[in-house]
Length: 163
Image (cartoon, rainbow, N blue to C red; front, side, top):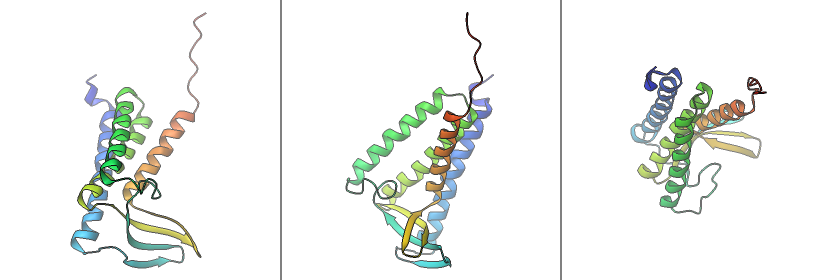
């Protein structure tokens, strides 16, 4: 079977590309068409606001003290490591998880180049406790990691012993 025709290759490439396109489109509409610049708040529910916050760190603002070039280098190494794993592993679940993570990471990296920071829009909170502000790319990365953890922890079929 042709390598590129494998379902795990085809579906993971489609999913990763879809994540990248959806996140880029969302950010383009909010920032470049509607003109949001940061600080806008639309209250949706008692626990959820639609906002624009600029994240200069990586996840949860971690590594916010690094220069943009250093952050891009860290993200580049992570994407290369994930791409190598994707190349080596044949599992559909693993490739889908990696594709979600790479699609989200690449979109957030594009934000750093285009805007100088990552645009986050979805704010979850309860009372005075602010949990997280995130974007579509972050959701994809999170689901990708969950799929990878599940795939690593799930029962594998037993191999017959060679004795």
